[in-house]
Length: 71
Image (cartoon, rainbow, N blue to C red; front, side, top):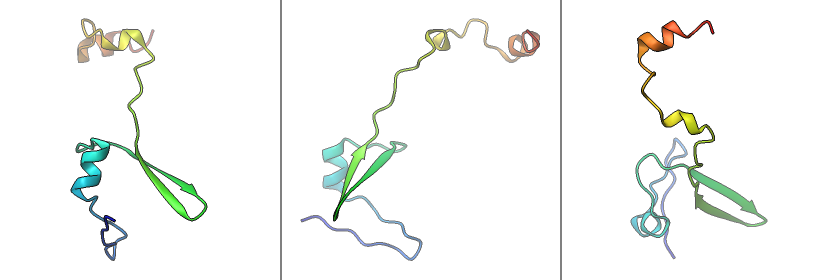
């Protein structure tokens, strides 16, 4: 069993074996699933960008955003 302590600010460190098992990296989002008397901890998968044009940066300068803001 792997354990960790809760601080007075309700924070805890996720133990290294758990981080390794979930392939966690800084900035990853976690999901807590409550099922009766247990909690399931999962890494939230990042969703693909729904907007296919979001990757185009050719016309995405501050000047372009200002010029097209009123359209």
